[in-house]
Image (cartoon, rainbow, N blue to C red):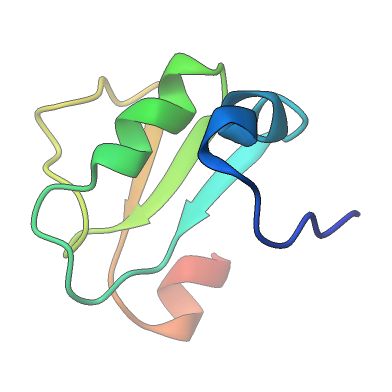
Length: 74
C-alpha cells in the first residue's frame, strides 16, 4: 500500500490509475463526482450511500455502504 498524499490536479488521473479500489467515505457529498472519475479510471468504487446516487454507476462498478465503520469494512 502506498499513500500518495496531495496530488496536483493534472496528476490525479495517473494517481487514480495506480489503485484497485476507490473508497469514498464522505458523509456530506450529495452526488460524488469523484466516484465517476474513479470509475472512469477503472477502479471499483466503494462509497457511502450518502455520497453517491446508486443509479449513476451499475452495481458491478460500485458497492453502496451505510455511513458507518462496520458497513464500510464489510
